Length: 128
Image (cartoon, rainbow, N blue to C red; front, side):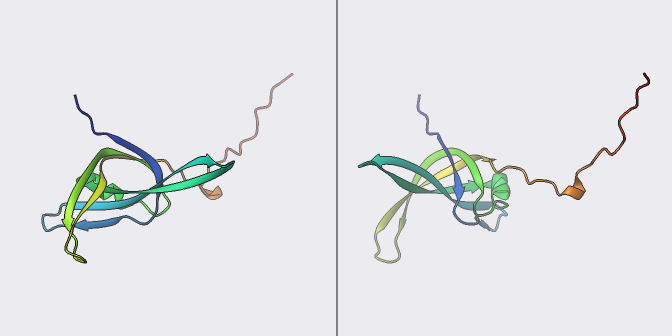
């Protein structure tokens, strides 16, 4: 049995780039940053890794509503593809995550005070 599954949790480094082709098929690209750190010579070294995530179809419609800085979890499969570089006429290979699911991890916005319902009724009086 073979499995190609990637789960990443990170923050969007830029707003999603969405496009639609002539058949109304949408594709959204996400730039996801993950961080790790390690200790070297008594000091912590931080490293940020950037991941190119590609989202297709209906999930792409949701992905394009996200904004830079959003905290998300993506699941999908790791894929590579090659293309001809226009700069020096060589073949280039890029690695990307073909996203199957997105989970938004941002906390819900706090409701404004006027939106919150307050129960201003007086406590019941009890007879002694």
